[in-house]
Image 1 (cartoon, rainbow, N blue to C red):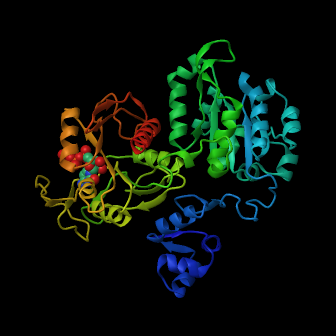
Image 2 (cartoon, protein in one colour; image 1 turned 135 degrees about the vertical axis):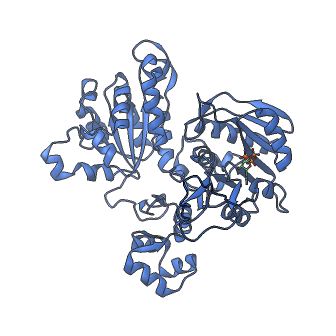
Image 3 (tube, helix red, strand yellow; image 1 turned 60 degrees about the horizontal axis):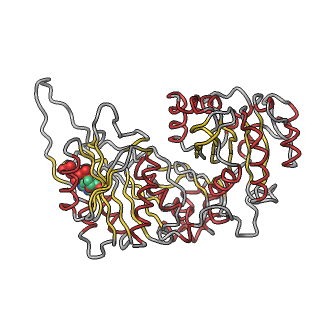
Length: 492
Ligand code: CTP
């Protein structure tokens, strides 16, 4: 299979045709063919993705489109019209916390960002476009249908001109509209049109925050890759106390800048101090898919959310993460080397190739069996509707057990145990049987909380030292909790 790409841009970014030839281990005529057809072979995708990511480019995973250049260490600006570093489109929605958007704009500018304001009609009830324009030194955009703006800068161009679209405050109404994909004003249209990262700082009354509809919108936006900054607990602007208070402008600005320039943030967490910085970590994620014939397959249920969240968390703390994943819909996290595989055998081969490593975390739901002989044609059903069908299966290699017993075994090997019954007992046995150091055990298959595909997870960490039970939490929070435990282990 081939994928359509903008190969000229990739060649320039990688330093020329010779560099890409070496990377793909092909001759000059292959590159000419790829250029003529505008296609790359599918196998080249993870290799090129990894090489561009290593160079600091932000890449869209599905078609390798270069979204932003490497952090500005070179003299070449990322955007020809940018003199002040990264460009942030600051969308202000209509809530009492809107006044804090002004302070957020100031903080962002102090961190070197170039801020352009966009306001909803609701926001204008709280602050004026003039105050934001005066502060940013830029026109503040507020109307989708202003002909002047369309002539000067169409809303699509405005949406694409940013490195980050940041919504401060993200009200319950704004999150609902964004989640539904409604585009009935400039701000929501930008959200649909942008290819940049999107971050939101929710702010609302605690009861509105606790409402199931808001929770759903928040989780769904987050699943789609929107970065959520807060909210936190405390006094809210409406005079009540509880969760729903917007993060402080300085924290929002630091978190926003970290999303686009992790290395250059004075206020951001200094990951060089994390014991994970520079550690080489293998993470497996997603399902494996084992073909039966040309169209059918056997697979385990897995969205890849948990494994990808773990990879993202470790990478954000400075680890050198190789994420080896089966087919999933999750976007590749920033700053990880992504290796895409399909079958268990391919996953094992990729893990062996990635060793030696300091740590391995096997979060993949590897299919336990594969078909002994895969048909190269679509298998036909027997004419008799009552006739059964026998498939001879053989066991797949146990990747976690292989890594645990490898001669170049990582110092810390962590597995998962997804169990439908006797969680603690089965997971403890699994830890011993597979020879890993820790098992993260979670109950699956319950009707009330399916885990698979959900943003939530509840788990316990089982090690030689005992059991640590964790409360139910977002998969992204579970990833952070695991990363905290690994950091603690490395400093023991
Ligand atoms: N695992 C693996 N290779 C396999 C099967 C599982 O690396 N062939 C890893 C998973 O990534 C996970 C752990 O082993 O970290 C446990 O996976 P799980 O599916 O719970 O266990 P199984 O080995 O399949 O055992 P069982 O089906 O008996 O529960």
